[in-house]
Length: 384
Image 1 (tube, one colour):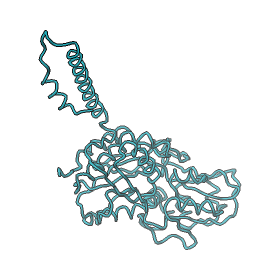
Image 2: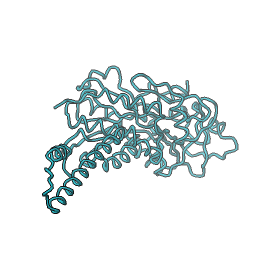
Image 3: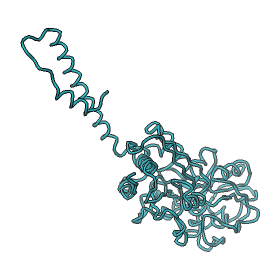
Image 4: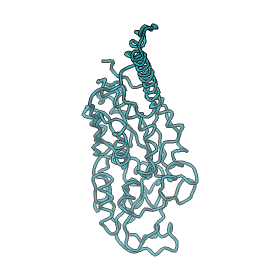
């Protein structure tokens, strides 16, 4: 199909008509007229199609093949893989790689501009802001999900835990599954005398950050392991460490007596059992996508789009719900990469949200989604 500019010039040329024209010439004029109308209509259709893709990740601004690299949060990895695969059909010229490695690695990689974007479930520390070589960083919330307390105890198929009991377990104060404090949370349940095996993350992890932050906030004096963070060095000596959420899930699934904190998506994939946790309203709530949505709905959103749904109010809110973000530099250094990255985030915040539930994540509430979409205008892309 020829561009519309060619249609305009050919229609202006026209052909002079006279009574002496033969039937053959008349037919030629008719053919040219039909072709001109068809091309003009096609040009109009193209414009309509282009405008209708707004908000869905339009890649018209990027030319040629573009590769974007990201690393970080394993908590959001399953969602990222689903949305990247779906986006490929929208933008076949864009290749997106996401390596995981933990929130700590993602933030470090973005600091040194080793990656184009990072996934993180925890915020940048104030003292680390100056380490980001590309300047100001923007937070784009993508999804949220429960952090499950997954366990593997032979004969124990139902488990309820208060925040105080949970904090005592992971502090190493409670060491057996038939401890009286666990029994108090589970009246009528037969508890074995099996030793408790704590499983935690080996890597710097936003999941660790949010889980320990919850235990510090809600567990009170039962939490003994100090300041929450991406990494802890004070876990009980008998504990085991797994790489990424999937690594923790694997150890829990293979170890009788084990208990670990695992994102909902990986816990479901590993067919793990998980505890119901007592929330701020006093209800024991199982980790579900709906319970995570309720927690996010009760959260306060900061101007930079950071928030915490941990220990959120509401009778149906799951108390250990984690946020997660894609972070990137406000000022991009490459026109093609910057446009491709903006287009991808546009898709994540638009059509990509429909993939969240299937991947076992909570989609953003409409109000937060709209704020994140509005922030896209802050991304600065070079003109050449």
